Length: 118
Image (tube, rainbow, N blue to C red; front, side, top):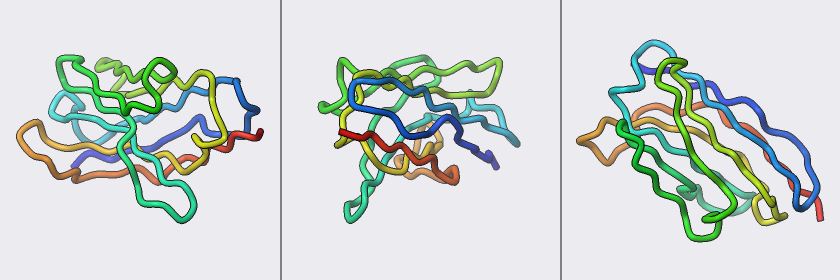
């Protein structure tokens, strides 16, 4: 089964950028749809972005135009480029993987903290 490890979180100021990486091991990421989720304190986890094997992407409305998801299948890695960050983007960001024909995510990373100061 695939194992996921996030990196790249940190503390930034409003308007700055961060890039999160999610490295996969144990399985080829071509078998999976990959997604980025986030959870703010006191709130439920929400889907931020997804990318299919063929590169089709989804972004939630509040990050469209600021964030971008991409994948490097040769490096078994998925990225989340976050620009023009806002305090409301603060949270723990998780990457997840699901099979193409399933809606259930079966693997999660440990999470990366992103904090955006006003």
